[in-house]
Image 1 (spheres, rainbow, N blue to C red):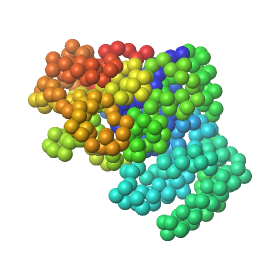
Image 2: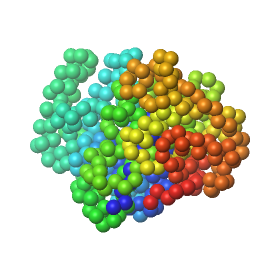
Image 3: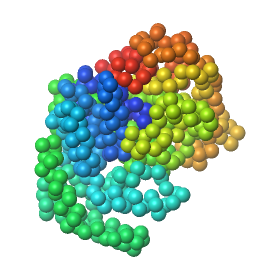
Image 4: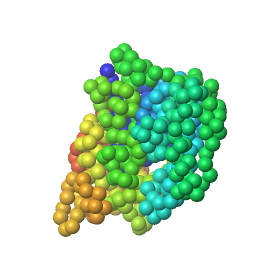
Length: 427
């Protein structure tokens, strides 16, 4: 049962799309198991660049079946728009499967998300404003709308009424907004039913049967480990579980069926949105990383905060995910620095700390302790093997591997599909 989980080992945006696409030709199913269109993957195929937000990256691999699992929250308008855009570019999207148990992002979820962020002011979380958090809240509060509800108008109407009973009170009395009409929401959601129908399936059954038939299934997380609702830098996190355990609940596959867990790491660190970030740079180096790395959010369009590699975070990701391998991306971005700082520990209240503190207060006050590693000036984008890399680049990779606690099995040396060095096969 070759089931693999591929996830971000930092704050997201590590290059998961490139890693998933690299495996796409050898994988039978690629499954998104959490998040929504607040995630973004950029995949470069030849001279074509694809920005994916909700769809699994495997949709670009002809032999692969892309799956949106039950743990994902789905904005139907965004999904249909994304499918239409790919179809116009000649990509076959007909094999897509969507779990009937996935929850729907409704228009009122988006409204609540936006007005809540504005109301919080300086205390805002930094959400994407796409209704992700409120939809997961509805799911936990058991007033959520699922994909399967689109095919029973009576149930759909009852559920929308139940959700809006409370939300309209909040919108009108707290935020001074207009109440949202039940019939308008129901009518809009029913309008998506026929368009989504060809894709809706019992994906839990499909995936478990595939594994029983020795098919290769890749579970693709959105966001990253430090944005996990339970294990991230709470409250500056997403509303789901991008960590490896989330693959089991978000796709309906038992943990004994997972054979490998691959963490994606940038050769430096980035973050989008608010929250603590010990190695963040506010100088010319930070701006250079942002410019050279093209660090702008695929989904949000926001500039990413940039900083040096944080080995403390990498070790934490190895531990909470049970990582078996790392895929190190964007090593090429570091070309040109005479010396490259790497955060090996934190200083908190005058004490050296080598593991991620569980206390939000301590992490907020953590100062990075750096070790300087020699850099390189050679162009590495054409490297096809580890030995092709300059000696200092090799030493940098080896140092990160030793500090992070899992082997680095692949290295990204450019944005292209073929600009990757494979050290060990993931399959």
